[in-house]
Image (cartoon, rainbow over all chains, first blue to last red; front, side, top):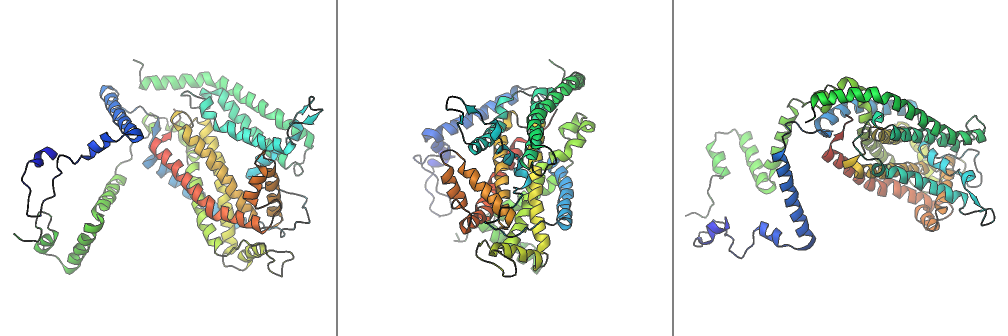
Length: 253
Length: 270
């Protein structure tokens, strides 16, 4: 474009767009001239675009190698149908089960039952792990951390562990049967969350609090172990079916 | 040579040479006038594309293509939990905005009819007893919040057990955990607003929890609760967190979360 127009005589009728002269850089040139991070970004984009292009050209796959399916329309249409039902459920619940409004706040009278909302029970329960807070003989049987600091740290540890799960469990296994260990960890977590929630409201649960405390730490590993055993047993038959179907569709080269 | 510009795109001449009814003519004139300024045609084109897209036959999904549907259909409700929590969030936002018209976050002495009531408590009581549909409105807000929280927890379990947090989606998993925590903070701040006994003593637990954080405990307690004992400052902070800060933050993070889902697609177990 630039070269074609540059040696034309200047138009004087005022209708044309003024052609850029040789000194005016095109947008591509401007991009290429920039330095530093933006320059690097530009170069990387160009590279990765070329890489994609090459991969696509040399690939002999006709069908897409599916790792995901699109949000629109598959997922959204299905979700809209299911969700409209759920929203009806919210309206039904709020019409039939209205919320409670207790007595007004009174700082001088502690009620017998102090509760957060149900979804914070697990966190509330982790605050009551005082008996697990070790005493250290070195500091004369004192505790290194106050019980409540210990409880807050327990929260941080639990959430932190959940956050790093993708970096601990790698690989392409998706189904619980393909990864019995991680499924068992999940089952253990869920059972533990249920028990620690019950522990946080132990004065409302019709059970001996000491028994409940012991069960909180005994049942989850047990449930996890059972899940592990069951999944391991199921695995062989399941994987056989899965592999047969998969390799029928995409025979190995 | 005339000063007037004349080319293929002389729309006025085009309108003149067509034989149009006054309605059509004025419509076209307005459209051209607006389009010159706002480039409306681009947006119309987008709409047209959308119109034709929805009329296309749905392409086969992975599960349909490989005839896995007979194994998977009963998981579908679990796959809609994320969208469901978004919808519950919208319901809670709308009902919450309506509740906000009638609520005032004040710990001053309220209605004389109720022993020891603050203004906050009295306004909630008034919403529930005096306001038309107020009872339902508060109920709806509370249930939408409860259901959203439940859906978010179950959504996390679904993602965990189907391994959907794996390779390309680690970032979204972490964003999801942030969202889950923010949802719980949202619920907690809302729980405190009626300023009844439960709210007050849940607030007390919150102050003690923040005070137990090593090193920064006192600072956090002062920032979030406005001091070490509960009062007007606490209520006002909870209110601003609940109706101003958190809505902006959570909406933005939800938008990012959904954008990533859109870009990466739905992970299918296979």
